[in-house]
Image (cartoon, rainbow, N blue to C red; front, side, top):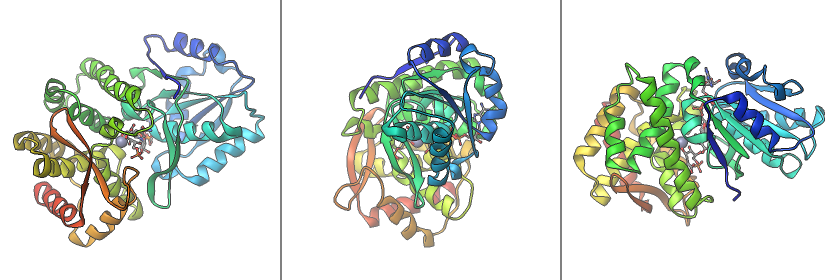
Length: 353
Ligand SMILES: NC(=O)c1ccc[n+]([C@@H]2O[C@H](COP(=O)([O-])OP(=O)(O)OC[C@H]3O[C@@H](n4cnc5c(N)ncnc54)[C@H](O)[C@@H]3O)[C@@H](O)[C@H]2O)c1
Ligand SMILES: O=C(O)C(=O)C[C@@H](O)[C@H](O)[C@H](O)COP(=O)(O)O
Ligand SMILES: [Zn+2]
């Protein structure tokens, strides 16, 4: 996979102009959702390179990360004169960078794209690493491709307009990065006060967090091995997110990941001797800031069925990434239905639902 340039920008105008010059193109498209069109497009609309750009605006939030939206983006690219030499700039959160990245990677068999992530989650995770795609058939990211952005430009100034819930959502992926890296980074993350955010410190932690992801992606861009570490919390988390989507209960991706971490750290204790005190500390943090996603035991079978679609699975076994300790990554751990049901019991008892 071609290496992605990740630029932590001090001057977005300069960084973007530079990134665009490096991608010769005949036509420039900018993809936003309805919210980032209002809140983020004004930040870059005055830049010289943006003056001749064509706009594509899609609906906001994850229910729009769909085949219907993808078709609408392909249609606009085609009708507005897009060619194989066009360039797409994705300006938005993970929904825009995932769908826009996939639209770019498929339009006329692939055009280059640049990501400008505007949510915390997209800055530390979604915009980086080349996983693109859409939700399909009620399943998260069921259709997609590994196609890296030509450049990813990070500017934490965009966080000024982001609401608290979306800050917490992105922070959950940072917590995941802490769990798979070092005890020092994890300890810092679980002692951070999300009720009174120190934005300077958060900015420093964003750089640390994205570096953790970058390092893993560089070793294994196509998720044949160690990249599965980045999926910690997601076997259970995606199942909870799919259940929420099916029941029209709005759940942000990072919240589902946080609850998924509670489940999978429990399995880690049981199977890999992950320390109980660290399970408790992480769970306390998650309970405090993410609350609970309630479900009863009647939902277990549905959640299990969602897990059988996890992209890490082979031969019909549900695949988890577990931990033997902070930073001690154990990939390709499978669990049977009984263990998964016990894990869901643990979640409900611990979270109080
Ligand atoms: N490709 C990957 O590696 C990867 C990694 C993690 C998550 N994801 C995917 O990312 C998606 C979630 O991304 P997300 O959490 O960024 O959600 P999102 O893109 O839906 O954005 C959340 C909300 O914030 C709004 N918003 C965005 N930037 C804003 C800003 N600066 N100010 C005000 N509002 C703003 C959006 O319009 C939206 O309403 C999920 O689909 C998830 O599956 C992908
Ligand atoms: O980059 C990765 O690899 C990840 O797994 C990061 C996850 O946070 C992200 O949610 C990703 O989209 C999940 O991928 P999937 O392959 O499980 O759909
Ligand atoms: Zn994720």
